[in-house]
Length: 262
Picture 1: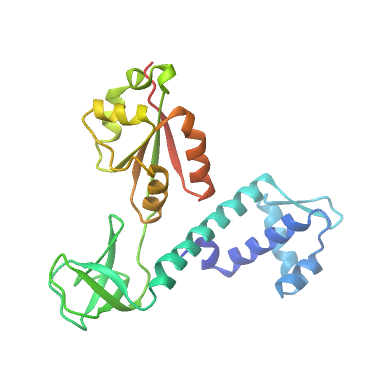
Picture 2 (picture 1 turned 180 degrees about the vertical axis):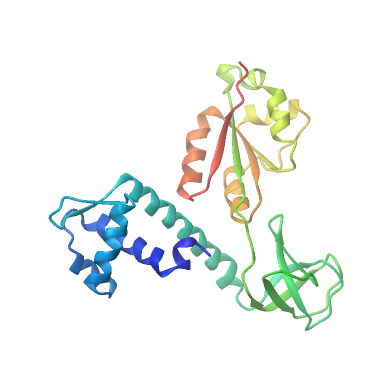
């Protein structure tokens, strides 16, 4: 669950900031209260807190503007909501009746099992302490796919981390100008490895590694992160801005590493 949905306070702050950003500077507290269906007094208290936190400024004449910090908080919260909505639409609604999972052990039909996400895949077993449970619709042997219904609780999922490794284009030396020792170290932790550009592919081959993904590496990194899988994307320098723009549009966090040999 995203932070902005976990408390009425954060939800109200988010909605008020949206209204101020959309109508600044000529926005009145009564107008915001009418739109949100709360009292002007409540809006006044929220705005006082927003001003105190540096998310909103006032010129003293009941005219409000959202600050740079307010915009950043709003964008971060909106990105979290976007990711949560994507999860609901793609992972909940589209599979609301039966989920597919991998059986951790031999399971019987009608058995209540715990659910866990590992390496981007859903597993069902008899583990204790998991926050999500379901009921098997058929028997399954360990390692087989099994249908799960009557899902209860939330499946814990930590967003995957993305490391973008920039390598020079062929005009600037290409794979011959890559710090291969640093590249070897970055891909040694078992993360999914993708390559964008011939220079990236050849650099990986020089350290004895074929990429897990070459065609569609950008989208693979996005989908993997949403499913909790971290990745390292080796990217030729001229494609880095496009890749970063894609990740930022999805609200995903990433680290940029320059592998150009010094």
